[in-house]
Image 1 (cartoon, rainbow, N blue to C red):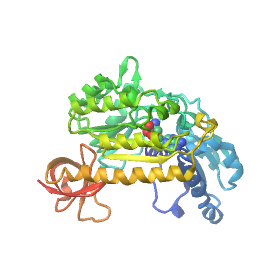
Image 2 (cartoon, rainbow, N blue to C red; image 1 turned 135 degrees about the horizontal axis):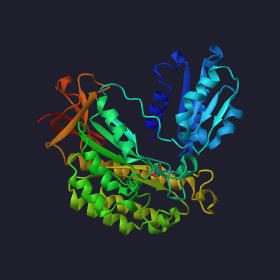
Image 3 (cartoon, rainbow, N blue to C red; image 1 turned 45 degrees about the vertical axis):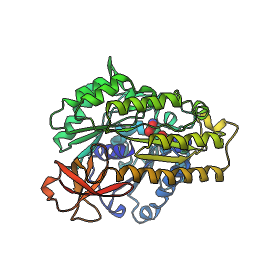
Length: 420
Ligand code: SAH
C-alpha cells in the first residue's frame, strides 16, 4: 500500500524521481505507523535531511503517510525543517500544496483531513516496461481489530468503483504491466453497486494483455465459497493467498476482535486447498498480544505446524495510540514475547525450506520480471505461487514473458532455476 502511495505521490507531481536526495528539489518521506518501530524510523528519516535544507533553503521537505496523519501538527512543531505533513487520503491535493509552498506563502502546511471525496483520483507512476504494478481497490478499513491503527489513520473503508479499477488497470497494462496486484486492507470485502469481490475477479480476467492477477490482503471471514470458486475458475488469478490469522488461540482471537474462530480459519484453508491443491499460503501472526499465555502461544505453534504456510510474517505486539489494545489492562513481558517470536520464526524458517525442497526438479511457469540486482547475468521471476526464482542462462528478451523453468536449487525464500 505504501509503495503504491509513493508512486501516486510521484505521479501527482508529474515528478522525475532522482537517485540521490541531494539532487532533489522536493523530498517526501512516506511513512508507516503500524508498529512503534516503523513510526520512530519515519521521524529519524526526516531528521537526516536537515543538513540538505541548510545547504539549500529552497528544498521542500514533507512527510506523507500514516505517521504524518497520526501526529500531524506535533511533527510540524517538533521538526523545524519540515515544510508539510500530508495524510494518505490527501494525496490528490499534494500538487496544489506544493505550488502554494513554492509561491512563497511561507506557511508550513498540515493536510490531514479525512473528508476527501476523490481519494482514488491520482493513479500511480509506472516505469515504462515494468512488468508488475499495483491497483488500489479500497481505502481504509471497517474491521475493528483491537491492535490495529489502520482505521484511525486511513479512515473507514471506501471501495473504488469497478469502472475506475478497470481504467487504472488498462492504463498500467498499456504501460507494459503484465501482472497486477489489487490491494486493499481487507481486499476480499470489496463491494460496489451490487458487485462483490468474486465478480470483480471475473471482470479482471477479461482484461486484454493482463497475464496475472494477485490481490492482498484478504480477511479470513470474507473468504466465501463464491470467492474460492472464482479464484479456481479464473486462469489469470495466481495460486497464492495471503490470509492473516494473527493467532492460533480462540481466546486471543476474541480479544483481538478478529470475528472468526480458529476452526473457521482451518476450515477455510481446507476448502481452499481442496479447490486448488497447488495454492501457496502465507499469513501474519502477532505474538504477545494482551495476556497471551504459554498455552495460547502453543496453539499458534501448532497451527503453523499443521498448516505449513509457505511464508509467515510475524511481529511482536506493539501498543498503538488510540487503539482498543492501548487501554487493555494486561500486557505480557517483553522478553517473553521476544522469545516466542524467535521460536516461531526459527520453526517457520525450517518449514518454509522443507516446503521449497519438495518443489525441486519440477517445472513451473515463471513470469520473468527483470535482471537480478545482485547478478546482472541472472534474470529474476516469480511463479504463480509467488515463489522467487533466479535464472541463469536466459536471454533478456524473455523479460515480460512467461517461461517454463525447472527449480534446481532451493533456499528458504527463493530458488535457482533453469529453462525446462
Ligand atoms: N489490513 C492489513 C493490515 C496491514 S498491517 C492487512 O491485513 O494486511 C500487516 C500486519 O501487521 C497485520 O496483519 C498484523 O499481523 C501486523 N500488525 C498490525 N498491527 C500491529 C501491532 N499493533 N503490533 C504488531 N503487529 C501488528
